[in-house]
Length: 88
Image 1 (cartoon, rainbow, N blue to C red):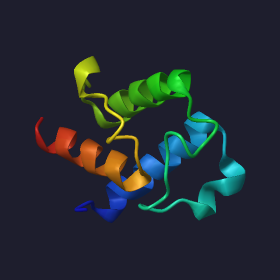
Image 2: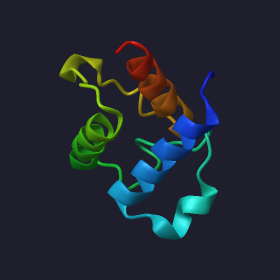
Image 3: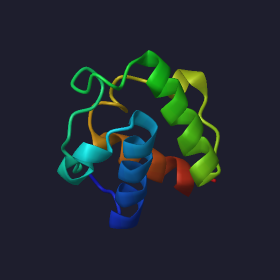
Image 4: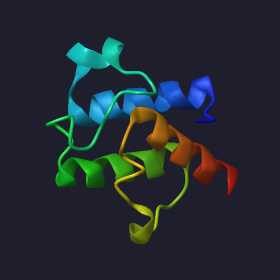
């Protein structure tokens, strides 16, 4: 997994704020499981998280890009964000 620390921290902050899990913010790292492991991350929260990431990082995510692999861990989501940023 190739992610930079700044992007990882930004993605973690976005996840925490979007899901309202401030009480668990310190426990998140690149290996933290997301979809299916975090009850707050349901399909509606995925849409909200995607929208927030698009606004925060200034890119658009096509619906067919959203897969379970992207939301497997904090690190996999960060890697996706890094790739989207690099392709701008």
